[in-house]
Image (cartoon, rainbow, N blue to C red):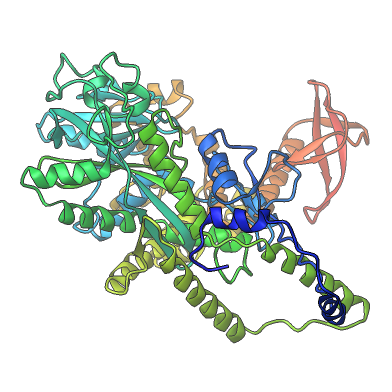
Length: 639
C-alpha cells in the first residue's frame, strides 16, 4: 500500500475477498517461523477522584487514551486533584507516578505567605522586587501599617481575608479604624489608576507551569484570560467604595451582575467580559503601547516570584523524595493574577495554586482544553515506566533471596545520572512545548536569578529555624557581661531559686519590646515594657491588673524566659528541676501528712502518668530525697 493512500483506499483493500493460496505458497508459509503476537501496551491510568472539572477527564480520555479511575485505592500513573497534596502522599509515591501539586506551594498560594516572602525579598532588592503593591499582614504588621497614616496622605487600601478566594470578603477602606482588630487580613495599597479596556477595569490570568524545583523549571502559557469588571471604572470614593462590580475583576463576582456578557463564540475573543490575552496584546499595540515590553516585564516578575520560594519548594520535595534524580514527580499549574496600570506597569496581585478549569463558555473550553493537553504532553509519561519499576523490584527481591547485595551509587554517580536525566528532559521538553514558552532556566539571566535564589535560601533558613539556634548562640556570646549575669541576681532572697538561676540561666537577652539602652532585666522595666502606655503604670494599676508582673512571680518569669531560649530537651529538664524546687518549698512551708502511695496522676511539662486524678482537697507531690531526685508519687492532704 502506498504511503499516499487515504483511509478510503485502505477500506477497499481490506474489503476485497481473499484469493485461494497455491500449493507452493503453502510450503513457503510452513517453512517460515510463526511470529508471536505483540503484547498490547498497557494504558496509562489517571485518577480524577478529587477533581470536579470535566475538561481534565475529556483530555485524558479522548486525547491521550488514558484509563480513567475514580477509585482511591487503585493503581495510577497520574493523580489530578483540585486541592493540594500532603507530604505523606508524595513520600509514598512510586518513581513513575506524577501528581499535579507540590506539597509546599502554600508559600505562594496563601496571600499572607506570598506577601511575607515578597516583602522579605524587597528589603534586599528594593528595585527588582517592586512589581507588587506594598503588603501588610494584620494584625502582625499593625504598627508598621499605622505609620502609613502618619504621613498625612489619604490613600485607599484593599483588605483580603487570608484563607478565602474568588473575591469573597474583599473590601476597600481608608482608615485602619475600619478594620476588625481580631480578624486576620492581608492589606495592600489600592492601585487607583489601572489601564482600561472599554472604560472597564480588568486583570490578566496568566497560566504558569512549574515542572521542577531543584533546579527550578518554569513555563508560561501564551494564551490566557482577561477578566473585565462589569461597570465603568471610577476612582474610589465614599460613594462607590462598596460597589464591587467597579473595583473587582473576579469572575465569581461579576458573573452575577446583570451587565455581564458571556462569550458564546470561541473564535471571537474580543467580546464579552472574559477575553483572551492575545486580544489584550493587540489592543495595547493598537493604542500606542508596547505589548512585547510588557510581556517581558510580566515574565521577569513571575520568575522572581518563584525564585523567592524555590528553597522552600526544594526542601519539602527533597525531604519526601531524596532519590528522585529526574525531579519530575510533581508539577503544578499556577494562575498568576496581574493588573496593569495606566503606565503599562504590571502588578502582581496574587497567585492561585488551583486555578479554575470551569468551561462555562466555548472560549473557556477552547483555552483550558488546550492548556491541559499541552501540560500532560509535556510530562512525557510512558506506561513502560511502570512495567520497568516492578521488574526492577522483582530483581531486587530475587537478589536478596540469593544473598546478593546491591551496591549503592556514589555521590559522583548520582550527579552524573542527574545531569544526564536533565539533558534528556531538556531535549524532550523543548521539542514538545506546544503553546508554552520556557521562562526559566534562561542562559542569559541564570546568574541574576541565582542571586535571588541564594538570598531567598538564606532568609528561609533563618526564618524557619535551621540556623536560628546558631544565630541565637552567636548573639548571646556577643552580649555584655552584665547582660549574661542578669538572672543570677534575679532573686537573691531565695537560695534555691538563686541556685536554679545559676544552673539554667547563665545567658539571656533583653525582652524584645525593650530598647537596647534598657537592657537591664528588672521587674520594673518588664512591667513598663508590658504596658502599652507608660503613663498607665502605677501601683494601683499594677495591683489591679493581672497582666502586670507581681514581685513574688519575678523568679518564675526569669526561669521561664531562659527556658524559652533553650533547646527543647534542655528546657524540659530545667522546667522539671524548677517544679521540683517549688514543691520542696511548699512541703517545707505547709503542714502535710502522707496518707497513701496512691500512684495518682502527675503531669509535668506535657507528659502524663496513668492514674486517677485527686480530689480538690488533696495535693499531688513527689517524694524527693536529699539529692533532689524523685522517688515516688504520693498523695498529701492538709492537716
